[in-house]
Length: 69
Image 1 (tube, rainbow, N blue to C red):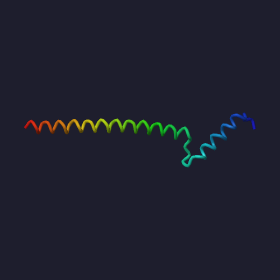
Image 2: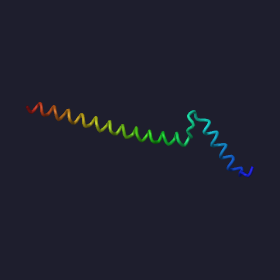
Image 3: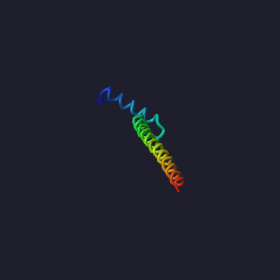
């Protein structure tokens, strides 16, 4: 065939991985997407925590203004 055995084995492995996933994405693609989604989730959690603290601060500030009036 003129193809090195190692290269042929690699092609077979890649094709098996490709066929193993329903949408044709490789394991590497799925791992990359999972990493991206984990980063996005961590960022969203930090944003949520910040907004929660900011809300608490502004509510307390408004309450203090009412008490001074």
